Length: 423
Image 1 (cartoon, rainbow, N blue to C red):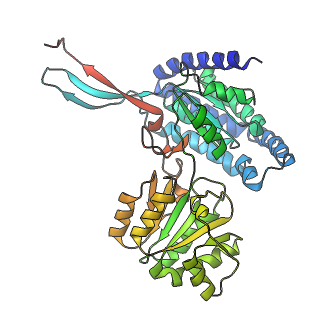
Image 2 (image 1 turned 60 degrees about the vertical axis):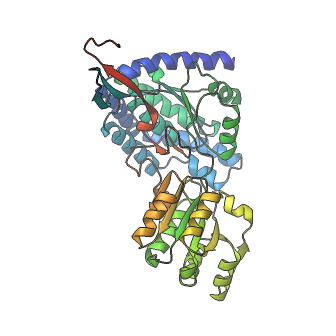
Image 3 (image 1 turned 60 degrees about the horizontal axis):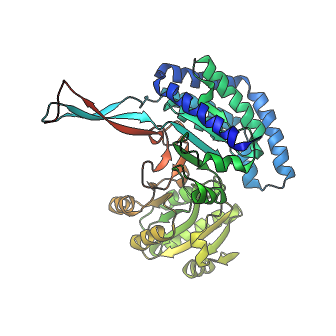
């Protein structure tokens, strides 16, 4: 296979399909999403069989538990796919919406219309649900998509792609609106991220090495985040029952996700009361604790052992594993300073009953998602009511945080006149 020719052909077909999608009716796009949902429910057993073959190969290759977790297409994941498709279909269609329309002294009206970006390239690794999430959001927002999943999920992604094509055809839309790259050759990625004539934006979903490579090589703009170094700060005016529930969920609900807590910050004024309870809860779930000197002193005084001294590097590490860094801070100011210095601007939370401190945290923490008295695990497009997400952006331009429908659109100025000419 000539990769250049193959990817160029995909790009041409995607560009043509994007024009058809931009003019497709809301009803047609929604019908396609519903048809895909029905097909997934119908072929649930076949999809799980395909996924089982992918999982067997992944285990044979020695992939770790976090990788296997991301690759697994469980009944719950399938239900979430179907629910996500229908939730996206139920969302208001942003395409064609005109906002801010105002008369100018010349008599013209000037406003902005929301329009699709065009062709979205999505590059992802082991999560088969991304195939459906990406397709749903791209279709609803009037875009075409080129999907390049990881080789480890090839059978499952191929099966899902067939169902997406079936849904598009049933709604009278071009099947080229969603294309799955049919080769695991890394050169295909290199070509996709440089095809500026056909691809308008790249959304990478994967590990740090993948994102770093794309940041180095891509010519097409990207919606991305590199790390998920997320914090929970337990303020000295926190409700301890809330703090325990939030911190335990933020760390142990799932270890391999970008919105999992990696560093726990505890105010000095509540450390003696809160830290031993939190530490024992984590250790009961076999989480390794890497602590600063102040945290160690508090925990050893409470007869909590099996502690590891935290290094400077621990504050900058996304573990994606049952490992947690813990630091005692003097107050809210020091917590905010630590988060803004060491965090990845992804998701950070405060546990406090003090409204003014909560509002300061929301204003001053420079992250894409900032939370009060809630687990960082809520930083997710589905949980935010976006139906699904195509990715999470830590950048500040165009899209920030979980990227749903509006993140896959742009605005153009429109002018409505009545024969006016400029003098």
